[in-house]
Length: 79
Image 1 (spheres, rainbow, N blue to C red):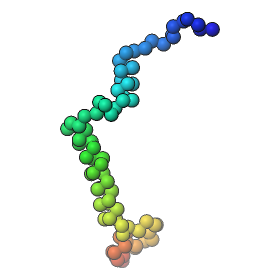
Image 2: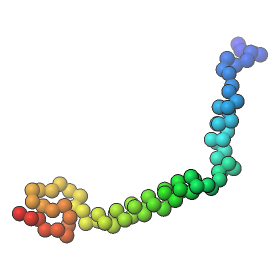
Image 3: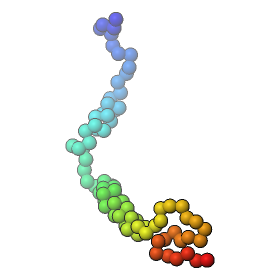
């Protein structure tokens, strides 16, 4: 068997450091301009856009339309 032999894989210290930083993000996280922009975009802007879109397009008919039918529920079909 392989008793006393070294592993044939070489360990790269830079890759090991990157793996460690990837797994231990909480101690190394700092708010700066980039992370603040990222957090605000995905925690505030995206949910607000989804909320706004759901309210604006609430009257949208989600079914197949026949010829002459309007997309919006409040509109009348023009013939």
